[in-house]
Image (cartoon, rainbow, N blue to C red; front, side, top):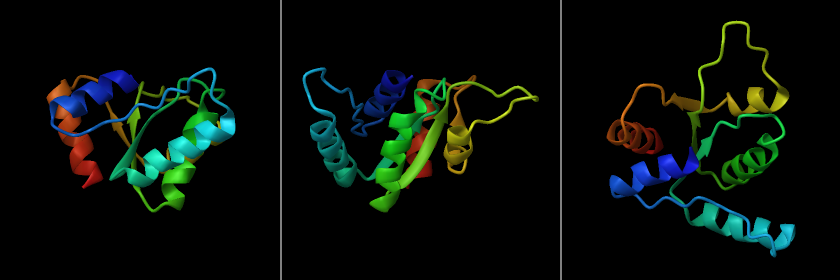
Length: 118
């Protein structure tokens, strides 16, 4: 999903950075580099994690973006069922605007993201 969103934003003329930690890089070095990227960004788009275990990295990025005063929006991976019980991390992430991607094309998705970040 992150690559899909990145490609849609690139096609719309916006630079999108998808963080991928190299296996040889220490957590501290990676965190510093990621914070530098967030500091340089106009806004931060997070992808709603599929599992609570995957949410830790997203929460770190969102926390850094919030501390740096960045505009933050999320992109939804799935529609939640009616009987959905949120985890703690989902409750935190759902306090931000989340754009649902179901049934929209790339150009429309990029347009919505860029408008939400403006």
